[in-house]
Length: 393
Image (cartoon, rainbow, N blue to C red; front, side):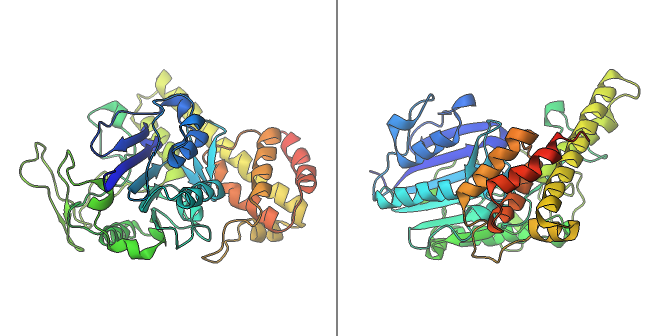
């Protein structure tokens, strides 16, 4: 087997399906649509061909000398990562269990994982061991949102309407020279740029810190199709002249209609509707439909907010006590919840009686986790939940 054999890309948020790629092979999508599931993800990582359903059937059939790189981007919430299916999620304890099993099977030499999602630090904080040769970087810590950048504002119009939306924040590096640690430092510095104020997240590191000294090439290959930026810690150097595209270097102080538009990932849908609404012709059917969609999104959020805090009030006595308990964030190094089965059951029970948790609503998994940590049983939870969710708001 080659030293660097497999690359896994899981880029749901920009509509690229699951790929399982050997670095010397093609990059066709292996799992798309309904076949992009948490169970398939686990089976792919474990190299369990008999457990995958649909798709190409390709898995990470790796051995003890192989390096693995996993990139996962989607919406997240405390203790979970989103999937395309409305009810399907990846829970932190399940993912870490799969990674531990992969290590027990001696199915890799080293592994690097990048996760771009809200509260993505909660996937590994207090859960990922330091002695299984996995280094993980997350776009945010356990308590904060990740942020979308390159969002259009009033002064910017996309040349194509389908791209009139937030694109995300990304960086490039010289894969042959940059280390994982240097890349992390650069991304962290750019992410917490003071120009963004409170609208910034903290890039975090977990697992085996010794792997930070490895060059990126060890995990992402050495012959990328496109040019890559080389980094100085303070400056960004444009790609080499062989690039066919015109590139503009943007400093952190440059005003630009995209780079200064910085939004909580959960609010990108609000920004999208608001921006489209401002652009729509006055009195048009399009404007009315956009206003309706925006109103429905905002009202849905208000209903979810009310229900969660009303359930908390019924369980913990007062609104003040409820707010303190539901919003409590554990110290770094502690997992989100002690009993993951309790958390999963609370989420499932809420969705059964109150409706599916949206991307926005899933931020309250921390509240459900804190209910479990406070010893709230399923019966107690249901007793508070049913009268709350049966009340028309």
